[in-house]
Length: 460
Figure 1 (tube, rainbow, N blue to C red):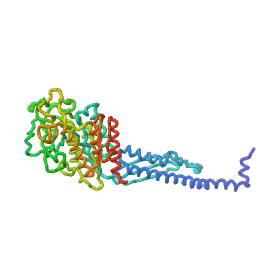
Figure 2 (cartoon, rainbow, N blue to C red; figure 1 turned 30 degrees about the horizontal axis):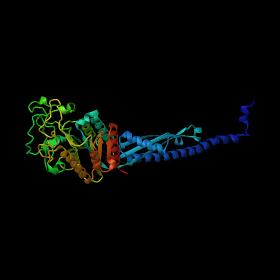
Figure 3 (cartoon, rainbow, N blue to C red; figure 1 turned 120 degrees about the vertical axis):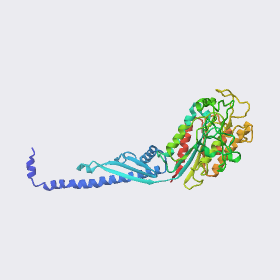
Figure 4 (cartoon, rainbow, N blue to C red; figure 1 turned 90 degrees about the vertical axis):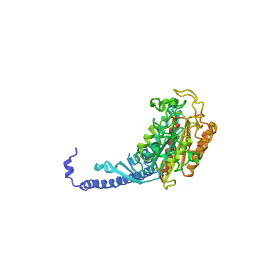
């Protein structure tokens, strides 16, 4: 048996024991150098990965969740989990144009374990200041009665909301973004500014005791689709007739809202939801989107919708929220969407109290009836329908000449080849024309447009 006491009393191994004890700090120091070097290498690589992630976010726009996912994807590609034994976590903060990110992890030690140190914490920080180009966007959206089918108007609301969410990116009041909504049917409702647009010589539309919603009769000649700031409009006022069966003295005979369809009545029959002028307030845009309904009667007059799209983007009266065309570092864009062909409509059968009006060639519209004001220069329906398309093409060219980027969408199937070609030609280029036969296709189209608009806004 070994006598422990004798070992301590033995002086022959003292040097060996002392040497063994002296190795502990030596090994610890060496281990620290090795482990610290490994931690530094991990920290350096993690910093590069975080810089790449932050720069990727800096060249993108979207919601905070979308931007965080972009950052995580890029970070993971450059620093896969488990690299050098680390499993980092990252956090992203977007405040206006400043993007800040942090990453942290713990590196397992090797030699330093002999002194009880099992991990070394590491962290990295990255900040990017991005230059956001401003965007003014007008969404000119078909709100005609056919949109009731399959709740297609609901799909339009959802799609427009998706685009709005992407572009605002969670910012309540955006310094570099303004969006306008122009719902159109056979007329356009200019909203709260309506009284300021009406000429004092408007004898065609006397004061209506049942109220005026805000639609207007378009101006004559080139001014009908132009951006002329000195010519006034007339009040939209569909007077009682066999095809609009109500009484000017009995409000109970007025039926409004999409649920009545062709049975609806009243002086504002066919007048859609009001325009939402350019605004940088997220809640104002979403309120306008939520308010959109499908409005029956009159037809589909896309040229009127497009003309008001031009006017909301213009800095001139009556809407003056837009910056001058060509303002540096600001893009103007417009989305035009329809679910059918441009046309004047006439009630073809009895609907509620409304009956066919054999004395006219069309319903009342933003041009009046074809038989009345002479705004179209013809009483022939086919000729007038072709003229709508000609006018729409003219507004498209005017917008392009002013540098406005135009996206067009045809929604649902069964749209004529003429309309498809017209919308292709209206778009700034073929890639900005979308054929969306289904509601899913419609939402995908709006998402694709939002993505492209996001890229336009970020300076690399």
